[in-house]
Length: 119
Image 1 (tube, rainbow, N blue to C red):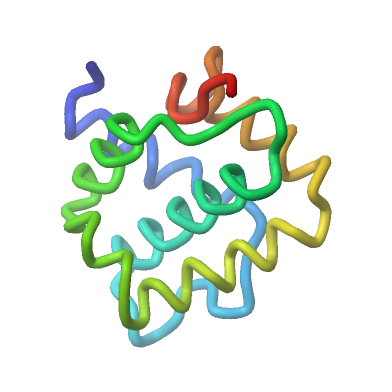
Image 2 (cartoon, helix red, strand yellow):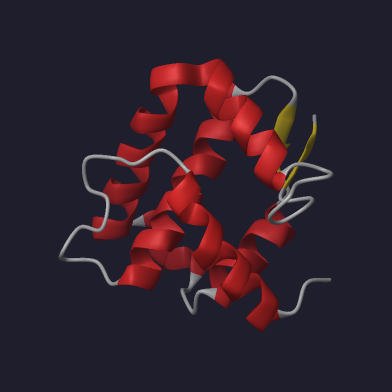
């Protein structure tokens, strides 16, 4: 299992490689909240749009908690709206976004291996 401090460093460093949404670095969200929303948006996108992969819930929860965000906070308010804007950004190029999600966070991902697993 990934240590929390390691996960925090990894998540913080990689999220800049993911597509930006209109609300990227929204002033009403802290940097960790924005990163959590971005990762949540990617997870939501993967679960809805990528036929070969899905989110591994425990690994996702660990990554969000490493940002010192309560995963339940992603379900409402500004973080939820921000996550939804990221889903829309990822949907602009579904094949490329699915491929990138797999490369960065899939079974042999270069960032957080196993965040997304085979369906």
